Length: 140
Image 1: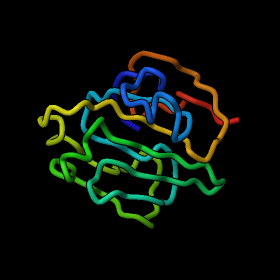
Image 2: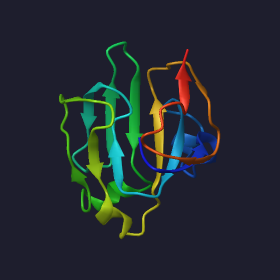
Image 3: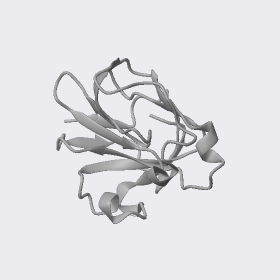
Image 4: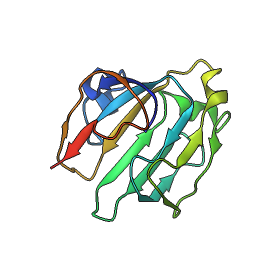
């Protein structure tokens, strides 16, 4: 999804994510400002503020990418949105470019949540990840 440092979802400072109120997942602290689609999907939600996206694979697995903490407060400033709701995206396609958001001082910890309840196993629990890396997790 992004380049950065992998963080267990339980360590995210926002309780909505750390207490898994929206579903299980993981987080990545961005080191670069580009977010890409983790798999081929339909964009089921594209918030007008640019801070969150919902994606759904053909098999029904849903993914919510919430970019940064409190970034909704920017009202879209700094988000260069590349997709809209209803669009079809391919794995690796740029969803949003955040270079300007990085300068705003908001946390770039980005939760990736699976609200559909898809069962998964993390193959990697910490360390540096790259958006081109494919084996971070495995769906059961």
